[in-house]
Image (tube, rainbow, N blue to C red; front, top):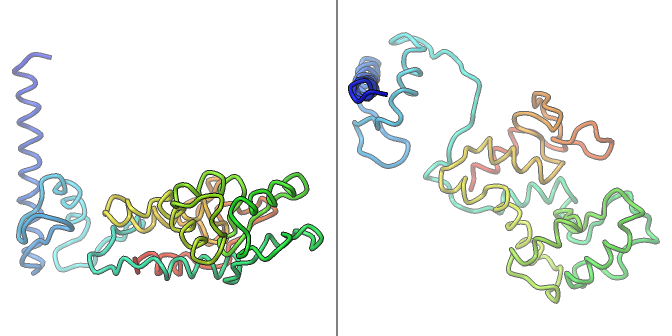
Amino acid sequence: MARWVKAVVAAGIVGTVGWAVREVQAREAAEGQGRVTPASGGSAGRVRPQDALQRFGDAFLRPVGGNAVQRPAQGHVRAARGSGNVEPLLSLIRKHESRGDYGAVWGRIARKDYPPRTLQTMTIGEVLAWQDSIDRKYNSEAAGAYQILEDTLRGLYKQAGLTLNDLFNRANQDRLAIALLRRRGLDRYRNGQITDVAFAQNLSKEWASLPAQTRDKRRRKATGQSYYAGDGLNKSLTTKAAVLAAVRKI
C-alpha cells in the first residue's frame, strides 16, 4: 500500500475516534450527566479513545431525554466496591453440590463402595486411591463438599499448594475449590478482564449444579438449565441471578 494511502487511512481512524469522543461527551452533557467517569483509570470528565466508538454507539441508540434501547445483557466487570471475599460463592457451590457436606460422595454410589473412612480424615492420596478403585463401576466418583472428580483432583492439589499427604479436610477442600475458581477465571474477574457473566458461565462448566449463563454445551440459549443439561446425570439446582449475586460479592 502506498505511503499516502496509509496516511489517509490512519488520519481517518484518528479523526473518527476524535469525532466519536466529542459526540459522546456532547450527548452525555445534553442528557444532564455533566461528566463522564471512566470504568477504570483515567480522569473524570474524559472519555478514553479506546472506549469512544462503543460508547458512541450506546449514546446514539437512545434519544436525548428518552429511554435507552435495551441490548442483550453481556455482564459487568467487577465493581471497585467488591469485598474480594469468595466465601459467599463457595457457600453457594457447596450448598448445591453437596448440601454443604464435606464428607459427601456422588449420590449414586452404593454404600458398599463408600470410602473406608470419613473423607475429611483421609489424605488426598487416599481419596484418589479410593476414587480410582470405583472408577470403572460408576459414571462419577465425585467427592467432598465441592464434588471434585478424580481426574480433576489429580491435576489440582499441587496448584492448591497441597501434597498427597495432606488431609482432604474442610480447610483443604476449600483451598482446592479456590484453585478451581482460579482455573475458571477468578483472578481475571478480580482484575476486570472478564465480566461477571463470563466468569459465572465458566463456573457452570465446572459445577453442573450452577446454571449456564449464556449457552449450554449443546449451544442452546441459557434459560436456567445446567451447562450439561440433557446428559442424564446433571441438572441446575439454582438460578442464574443467584450465581451472579454471589459472584458480585467478590
